[in-house]
Amino acid sequence: MNSLQKGDKKLLNAWAFYDWANSVYSLVITSAVFPIFYLALFSKEQTYIHVFGTEIKNSALISFVTAAAFLKVAFISPLLSGIADYVGNKKFFMKFFCYLGAFSCIGLYWFSLEHIYVSLLFYFLGLIGFWGSLVFYNSYLPDIAFEEQQDAISAKGYSLGYFGSVLLLAASLFLIMSAPDAEKIMQMRYSFVMVGIWWIVFSQYTYYYLPKGNENSQKITNDILFNGFKELKKVWISLEENFALKKYLISFFVYSMAVQTVMLVATYFGEQEIQWESKAAATTGLITCILLIQIVAIFGALLTSKASKKYGNITTLIVINCFWTVLCVAAYFIKLPLHFYIMAALVGLVMGGIQSLSRSTYSKLLPETQDTASFFSFYDVSEKIGIVIGMLVYGIIDQITGSPRFAIVFLAVFFIVGVLLLRKVPKK
Image 1 (tube, rainbow, N blue to C red):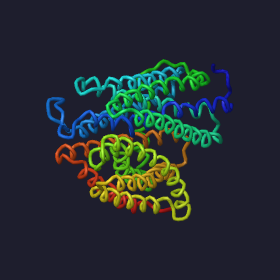
Image 2: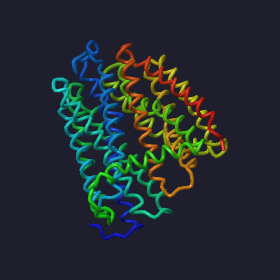
Image 3: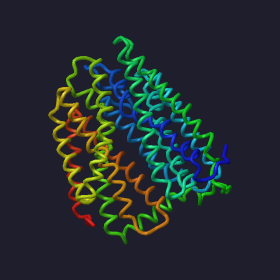
Image 4: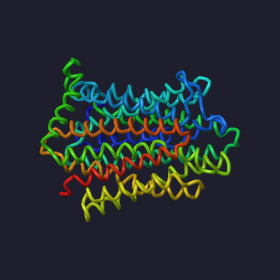
């Protein structure tokens, strides 16, 4: 069905509902259940696995695979953006990546160390599917909503995604904790299947109302295919004329790689380094911490918004980066579950704040232009490349030292450098 007019309330709600469908991936697979499941496949005595011709530590291995996936995403995003701007059937591409990600989540049910290569491929493709579908999902926004509607419906999508993902995570936690210890791993496998089914089923509402695409029916030529890269090059050239934006982007690139890395590896760190009473206690504690971070992040974003109004964006970002630096150093010393709960709450407090404020600060520094999509594409690609570097640094230090504690502390260096670079950005 594609007869609804731009700005129609039903069409806007259908678009926003895709956040409800896909956000379960980022919470259950990326942050909560899968990291616990993955590390549970290894014994405390045997944390290394022979793969790719060498012995690699378990948490370092998943860091390297995650970095490879984000590198792939950083490369294909401009290609997909170019297609999304011109192709007349971008719903097909959105569906393709959605189903790729969803069926890969279902494939994680069979994840095992005995078939590690196929298992890691499912994890890799799940990440590609999630981020690939978002490129086309985001590109629909100007097609279905007028400019004055876009902020509100985008925020609604975020809210739906939060509630939906927390709901499924809570259901997964109930199933896992109510099962005997010997069956908890199997319940985690079921949660991966639940994510895939949830993603597919609830996305149908979105697909039913979204239009096929824009009215452009051009064939995809080389010029169209590489248009995204051309737009990124234009943005890069334009930065030479915008001192404040260039300085800010460099600082964002540095501290963002640390923020995203901490978020991606927090559960792996907690499972390996915290002295839980038992495996069951570790599972409950870690998932509870993820929920705690999600809830506190909302309040953190609100507090950060108020602080930025009073003290300015750059000053607030400097303070938040200093706070992150302290958290990274403190992480080296935490060992008890109580310490980890406190750390989770503090991370949530600054996690939501630094993400929302970073994007809004970038928006305020943009020059007068109608081509904001290209600037935000540049912003997203910078963020993804930062994740690649951050995950590689974390994985290498974890592999060499055998402990993620040293890797977390090293991430503090990125926050310190970020502060120094932010001080060079004009505060007004």
